[in-house]
Length: 200
Image (cartoon, rainbow, N blue to C red; front, top):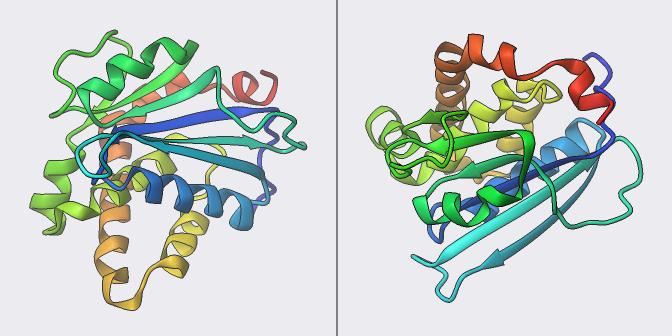
């Protein structure tokens, strides 16, 4: 595997509703980036008043260097899986940052600069289990983020899952990666330039 890309500091916020698997998504991605890719990663999370149905967010800070401050404040990427989450956290997305949406649930994006996929419908209709939605997101981000190696992230995902749900989640991951490549391929090339990330 090629050496990981140098990252000064990269902040991602996963946000949405309780029950969408936001925290699990952040934990799996963070573990894959730390153990599989060798980055320093901090993960922080918060729930709304109810675990299911309330708001939920999980932040990752990723760096090749030691992380001096663990909390995300100026987001490089916001993943918003509900309209409320998008409205609440969009102001924290830095200029030039990337907004990734659940396109069926975020009907009124605050900007026309975003990447969207109907993650919930994809999990329900293509994978057969709506709870695999967060793994579809993980697969899509593994295509989009230039410092993520798809095979390494998939292996990390499989390592933390119980055997009985491994196959369906691997299917969800591959689906997300494939559709992101198909839908976002050219747009992703417009968004990311290596110097933007490594020299921020």
